[in-house]
Image (tube, rainbow, N blue to C red):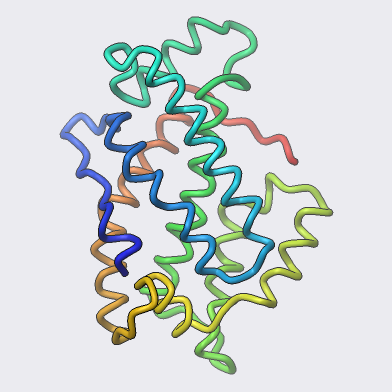
Amino acid sequence: MALLLEHQFKQLSADRQVETRPFLESVSHLPPFFDCLGSTVFAPIKADIMGNITNIKAVYDSNPGRYKTLQLILEAEKEMHGSQWPKVGATLALMWLKRGLRFIQVLLQSLVDGERDENNPNLIRVNANKAYEIALKKYHGWLVQSLFKVGMLAAPYKSDFLKALSKGRDVKEEDCLEKIRQFLVNFTATVDTIYELYMKMNAELDYTV
């Protein structure tokens, strides 16, 4: 579980603002999560996440004082880009990034909740499928959906997945799941808050790729 717990997400403040710098520092360590899933079908998601992080960081680095929180970035870009917003800049990058983060969150939550295929209890296909259905499927066209359907068949065994998350160390399943629960507390709160921000600012777009 080293992959997750070494870079915990920060607890949100009382006003539920997501500070940009700590967020970027934590999220930048998440792309290798998709390597743990084994299938090359997840490589585009990993690449998208890395690209979106880079785009958000570029905006933040241009004026760290002005862009101290994610909300401040969205508000500034809305004023700056007018009718082009929200399909522009860090706003667009964060919109797609949060979907990748939701995929991770749903998959991990499904695992700790004990959801599984009773006929194949050591596979994580059920968990990965649920994550894809909730977080990404509606934004993908038929071709991309078809690729993912095939890729899910190559999802790893749960034991191999947990070992990969632990950076190759042999660990007890329950110990791993407990550490995932710890990670999910602040991670889920952060992802939920970003989704709420997009709904509040009417910044969500439903187009497919």
